[in-house]
Length: 235
Image 1 (cartoon, rainbow, N blue to C red):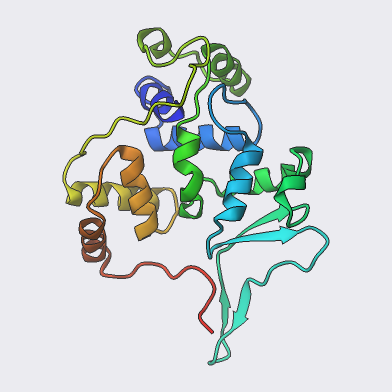
Image 2: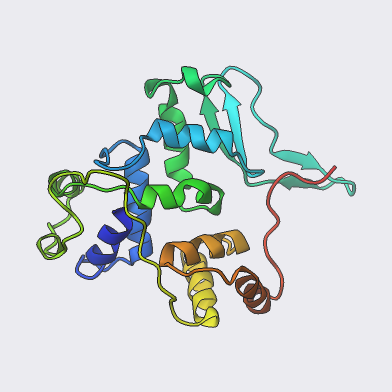
């Protein structure tokens, strides 16, 4: 699975990269079609899933129509520019979409990948699997040295596994305070605003079960309650 590849790869890659950075790179590569997972849904199925479970900060734009509004005039005459992910789609009937028609949407997702707006499909992407041959071919095109971990891990096989993808192992990682501190520091280091939704997604990726209220309370304490405002303004 991509999350496990990133975990092992981060221990030997030079220059050093974190597991989170490699997870982001692998996710972007998947959306850009740089490799095709041997186990897991296609990009098209993932895009359709996003369309059917759209969030306030995710806007689908039918090409040829007026672009979605991202600038609102406030009561004090100031302008509010909202950070929205705009995905161009051929029409509003996903059953008619083809892979070729959605290339622009895939690229838009790749550019914003890692943002909490895509949390609905992030776990699915992380559970996608690659064969050694596909992974090796991809890293060669990127100029990376071939890592040594592959031969020592049994969960990545030369052929795709049959049956459903096994769930990611779950474990409790550190304390709530340590998890929140790590998430906030990682977000700020990459120029992103820490959010509660992003924290919860990170906790799930890292294998932490439950504790949503505890996470949010600790997030408010460390951030001073200043979570960024996202989504369309209330009318």
